[in-house]
Length: 414
Image (cartoon, rainbow, N blue to C red; front, side):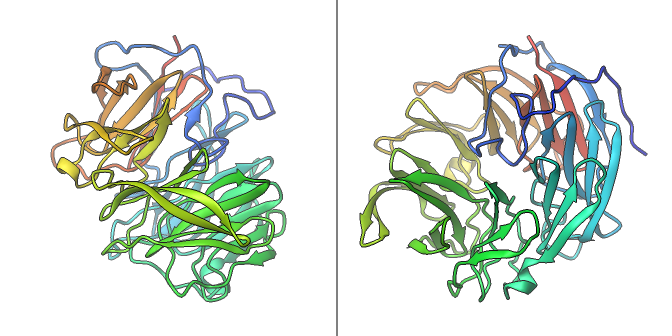
């Protein structure tokens, strides 16, 4: 049974605004909230807890975070060996749920849902670890269309289950089944019909959500396959670059970061490599600028570029640290083992860092030192708790934190 503490409903307009977070890493995929008027420090014990929702699924349930739009919140979790999409209002009251097929369950590695729902206008798009891609109506959870992209494009399941959060850009929906009939595909978001499919790369897909960038009038979508990274022209599906970037367990999980005609790619074996892009006969050539072994990002945990510096968490380097790396030359400025590995988001010039052991930190981005302003421990974590990999979200002057089957909502308004 859900246990809720209620608060007044936040008034949200019916158009996309600062109080919307419609997909993984926000409206533009850059993981930066536009919220203002937030606390610049937290009281001892953390900001006020508005409500908590328990039993989003059951037992080990999920790594998905939340999407928020027009006064509704969406997430997913396992229940009764099924993958469930949940819709709540901003008081934490459940409005509807939808069964989107078999769950990634016990007997599999790391049971639970992976991807975060994507909201586009009146529609929600959910992607399960088994490849079920479903479009639902936001207001009532009614199915509009569904297809299994692993089956349709002859993809092969990966060890830890499909994990990308799908991306919508204009009328196209992008996903990466890694199949013989399509490594990356663009579908009509209204009908689910195939617009184009990039020919198979001969490799399985990885665990990464895509990055979209524009360069020289060309819109490019890039993501990882199991042993490298590739880029595709969004207009045609043409493969424009492919770069081997191998990891011994094929766990390429970190999204490529594009900035100023450069692309940063990372994984736990090679670390991070910055590539400069140039044109080469209709294709894109990538030339190494620098490489940094300590930038061994795993779960999309180095997600922030601010004022010329990267902030986030390492995986193996020094056992997992909060770190700062110079974008220009790849120099590691520092790595602090205070709370270890984690994920982060950004709002009003500050970093919100959520460690995989339940520490929530407010950090000032500072290339000279690890600069913690405030911290608190998220309830429910003990020494034997499994790691949490759901990314924090800031929306509507609230901080949303997920710990497996529990979702917490904190008031961070000034």
